[in-house]
Amino acid sequence: MKKRLEQGVILLGTFLVAFMGSALNPAIPSIAGEFHAGASQSGWIVTAYMVTCTALPVPFGRWAEQTEPKKILAGGLGIFTAASIGGIFISSMALLLGIRALQGIGTAMIYSTGMWILIRGADEDIRAKLLGYSSAAMYLGLASGPAAGGILNQYLGWRMIFAAAAVFSAVAFSGSLMILKHTKPANPGFPVPGKTSPSGSSLILYASAAAAFTAGLQLISAGWWGWMAVTGGVVLIVLYTVREKQAERPLIPLKQLRKRPALGIHCISSIISCGVNFVINYLLSLYLQIGMGISPQKAGLLLILSPAVQAVTSVGVGKVMMQTRVSPRILAAVGILGSGGAALWFSQINGQWPVWAICMGLGAAGFFSAMFTAPNTMEIMTAAGKERMNLASALISTVRSLGNSTGVASASLASSFLLGQARLSEAKPELLSEVLKLVFSFWAVLCILGFIMELRKKV
Image (cartoon, rainbow, N blue to C red):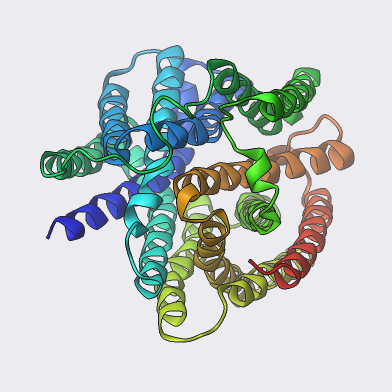
């Protein structure tokens, strides 16, 4: 019963953070109008969340290794609940950005421990099934977020999006407290507390590097300071790497992980997969409205198809891994190649495309993304080894966020190259079509490289 409760809390938490990551997007124009915010300021509603989601999972994951991971999970759900409740009553844009950053902190705590707790102690077959359910919960949140957010914003106001998140997170938080109540204090077994805790300088350097790099990718179209943030992030990453090689208590054990090159390869593949799927949905949402004249409501309903297919397929992929001897590496390779095919399909889109052609492409994108996600997660966990499974859980969250941010950056760079100072939302249909062709072709090539890497490197 306790294990079922654990699984339910983690799956609900996974759904919740995916839901809130996408549900607020349709309400951004309403929020900007209420607080008289410009485009650059309202863009931080997404950026503040993404920065903390990317920068903090690994530090929290290492912290969880020093204590009981369930405490970190419960703390994350508690912070997310408090932030969601606070979002109902905010009265300024500054407070909203603080709330979003706080939600990102809670998300980082949930993601850094949830996957590890979910599969810890499970047999490999059961682990595959649980990873399929986890992927399904994530994609269900992504599918329902924009639709629910749009409906709540239209009829009840954008604050009700925070209210809905508060209800879900309060249920999950209550469940996590029940789990803690019946959890006996235990030494996680690795590492020994007090002897391998990372130094404060490692934590600060890593978090600063990840935050600067992610913020720069998100805001690279804003001008020179976006590029400065990316450059600063790269410099900090170099400094962090030099510092970690000399540290007795590294945040990320680079020397050990260097002996496991498959881990890095699977993480790079995850960045590519998340990036291509994010950019497909991001650019199509604009092209359906600008290039094809489809209403925002109808465009939103069409785009739900991809994550809905992902949610359904993820459960089936988990069962395939559990019941057959098909290597997760093969499934992941086919999945990333198929995602590249979907990108190549949409690179040819024009204003005359029938709805069935769009639906076929979105369905394929969702199917192949689901085929990749759970097997890739399994491969990362296996490559990290049992003693580093919690770090692997944190890395999965980090690389997925990096993939989304890289997708934003690729679209921004392509639009700057082809459109100059014009914004994507203001582009002419024929120029927007050129942006899609360039970006989707770029990601299709990356997917081919990911396919080759997945096939060449065994764990």
